[in-house]
Amino acid sequence: MIPKTVLLAGSGHAHLEVIREMPQELVAKHRFILVSPSTKTYYSGLIPKLISNEIGAKQLTIESAAYAKSKGFEFIKSSVESIDEKRNNITLQNGENLNFDILSLNIGGTPQDIKTSCPLTTVHLRPFDNFIEGLERINKAVESIKKPRFIVVGGGPAGVEVAVALKTRFNKNQKLGAEICIVTEGERLCATYSESISKKILSAINSIGIAVNFNESTEIFDQYILLKNGNKLEFDFILIVTPTKPSPLLLKPIDNSLRIAANIFAVGDCAKMQNYSKLPRSGVTAVHQGRHLAQSIGQLLEGSSPKDFKPNKNSLNILITGEEVARAVWGTSCSFESKLLFKIKNWIDANYMQKFSESLPTSPKSVTQI
Image (tube, rainbow, N blue to C red; front, side, top):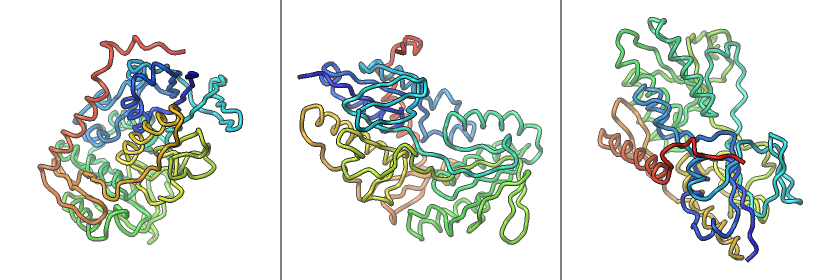
C-alpha cells in the first residue's frame, strides 16, 4: 500500500473525534497532519460555566496539538489561506504549501459582521480565543460598575445559555447585581425547537429576570442599541451570540457524504449541507459528523467509497435555563426541565473532557511543531 497524506485543517470538535477514533494501524501506515492556528481547542459546552465564573479557561481547554501528537499525528501551527482542488494542494497563512491525498476542513464559521461604535465593550462569542480575551476584559471592568447592564444579541440556544450564565453569576454577587436582556431579530427564542418549547424557555428565563426584545435589528451605537420603537436600550457590555456563516473557502455546500470533492471533506460550522440545510450547527452535530468522518477517511484509504452521512432524526440537547436547572430537548418537540438534568449535563461535560486527557503526556510542552 502506498502511504497517503491526510490533512485535517482545524481542530474543532469534529476533527477531535477523528483523531480519537482513527485506528492506529491506519495512522501508522499513512501520514496524518493536523493544521490549526492554535495548539488548543475550547470545549463549547463549558462556556456557560466560564461566564458564570464557576471555572477558569484552563478547565475548558483541550490541548489539541498535544492530543494529536499522542495519537501519531503531526502538527502545524497555521491556518488555511487557499485550496487548490485540482492540484490537491493547500497554501497556509505562513506561506507553506502542503500536498494532500485527503483533506478535511473543520475551520469554523465566519461570525456575522455586526458593526459597533464601542469595540472595547463588545464581545463576540466566536472565535472562542477572542471571546475568552474579551471576557477577561469584562471581568476587570465590571467590578467598578454598581449595576452592570448586559445585552446578549442572539436568541438561539447559545444566546439563552450566555444570558442565563450572566444572570447566575451576578445573582451570586448581590453587591453588584446586573440587568440582563436578550435582543433577537427572531419572533421567538430557539426557533429550531417547537413553538411550545420556545414559550417554556422564554417563561423560564423571564422568571429569573432576563428580558427579551424580539423582532429587532441590531445597530450598536455608543453604549446603546436603538430599538424599532425609538427607545434606546443602554448597556455597559454587549455580547454577540449570533450564528456563524459558512467559511468563504467553501464556495458550495457539502453533499451527503460530507464532501465538496472526491477527496475533500468539510464538517462543523464551516460547512452547510446541501440536502440538510436546517441541520443545527451545533457541537452535537459536529461530534456526529466527526465520528462518521473518521470512518469515511478510513474507507477512502482502504480504496472503498464513503457512505452517506445520515443525521440523527432526533438528537438530545440539554440547555441551561436557570441556576442549576436545565431543559432537555429531544428532537424539536419533546422536552422537560429539572435540576437533575443540570447534574447530567455536568457529567456529560466532564466525561467529554476526560476523553482528550487520557492519552496526553504529562506536559503539553513536549509537543513539537513542524
